[in-house]
Image 1 (cartoon, rainbow, N blue to C red):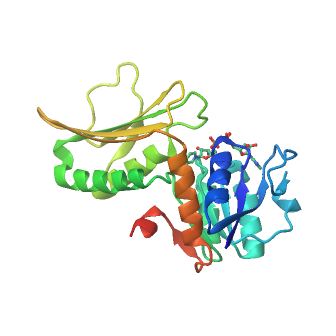
Image 2 (image 1 turned 90 degrees about the vertical axis):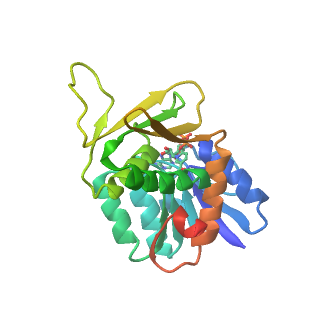
Amino acid sequence: MINILISGIFGHMGRNVAELVDADKDTKLLCGVDLKAGESYGAPVYASFKDVTEKADAVIDFSSAANLKNVLGYAKRTGCSVVLAATDYTDDDLKAIEQASQEIAVFKTANLSVGVNLLQKLVKEAAAFLGDAFDVEIVERHHNLKKDAPSGTAYMLAESVNEAFGQQKHYVYGRSGMVGARDKKEIGIHAVRGGTIVGEHEVMFAGEDEIVTISHSARSKKVFAAGAVTAAKFVAGKPAGKYDMHDVIG
Ligand SMILES: NC(=O)c1ccc[n+]([C@@H]2O[C@H](COP(=O)([O-])OP(=O)(O)OC[C@H]3O[C@@H](n4cnc5c(N)ncnc54)[C@H](O)[C@@H]3O)[C@@H](O)[C@H]2O)c1
């Protein structure tokens, strides 16, 4: 049985993950951490990692990048594995994640859906195949409550495209005013916000007289929650290092 601590358990994602952890015969909800602690959840929920006395096999963090130090501090103190699912990490955060991965197993991905991880592979392949003759533009769409923009997944896709171009491209966010003709070295990234859209990502390769579009649409937050539980089962007990969805999919 894999004992799971859910960080951000009272959030939209945290609640979905808790349901799946309960339903999975291999996992057990050990406890939760959330600023909104107080509500009961069939397991203790603490306001801070400082108050946690239980030792988990894996932490699933769906709280916020601002909570990263506390998540990593707990994991390093207890030697458990972590699934970092929050987005919007700063460069300093990424360094802290890199350092932590020398001591503990860290699973990090901007997107836990299997489909998006396939999309990532496909866009890299398409960029290498189509080359500079095609302009690359990424459009992401999310619900009106999303705080960060563009999405971590849009960056993840842009990085995969840029890898195929030997890091020769730079990112341009939205366009407005007299921006002039498009520079071949641009990857355009555009964030649309509205209603209850769960998460849509579209990568367009626009060439002369033809367009290739590769896209993914998440229809429910459950795909991310299911990915988080799969990731936690995968990373629990693994040696120190960095892991992502591609390690799981193989
Ligand atoms: N990687 C993925 O596949 C994926 C998918 C969906 C969402 N996300 C990311 O997950 C995060 C959470 O999304 P959500 O929609 O559930 O948000 P949410 O605002 O509904 O939930 C966040 C929860 O975390 C708690 N929280 C925030 N800061 C905290 C802290 N410092 N300590 C303890 N608890 C804290 C809040 O009280 C809240 O209950 C966001 O960063 C989002 O972008 C990632």
